[in-house]
Image (cartoon, rainbow, N blue to C red; front, side, top):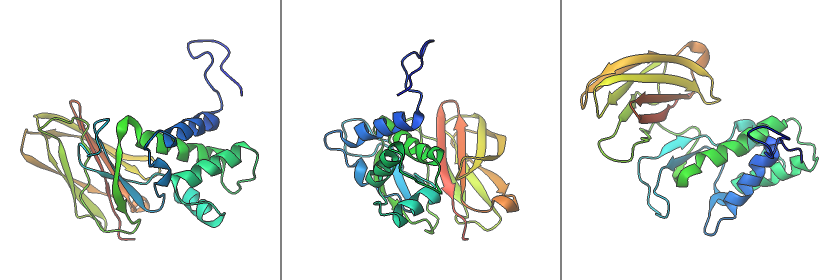
Length: 231
């Protein structure tokens, strides 16, 4: 396995698919871990938690863990559509199995997404079907109260929606919108007043009218969620 020969990261594994697959293997074999059983259809609702606790420490965020291309491949090629199935697929790809039409980069991205989604003791609290209705989703990076609360209306949307932002402090909020594949489609700034609802309308460009991920940040507080399309 090629390693970086020198520099500050000397000895690091250069094959990222191998490195991420190895990390996922260890994550699934931790005593008491149920990560291997996590389903990869629809969206998993993931919440923060304090390490050692079995209870979530905040609101859950519906998260599409892998692309539809990866989940469809698992379902049609004899793999379980779970993290365990993805781990097996990654092992097969590393062993030289033909995984066309998938690419090694797509598999590496999926494995990396799993590792990052459940980093820092995050916990699975449920699932939302891919075509499910619009539930409010908010994730706050600051665990103590008060928190940054963001709600999307309507959800699902047709052509536009608005974010209702209730911030724990006064200042300037940064707002970004992304596609489910991570492409940033818009960003803006909005002045907010502590503990007052501030509405931010957004008209989604026609080419991007599918599920939209929003991210709001202000002075160390972060909230993110998904606005669903009826299509």
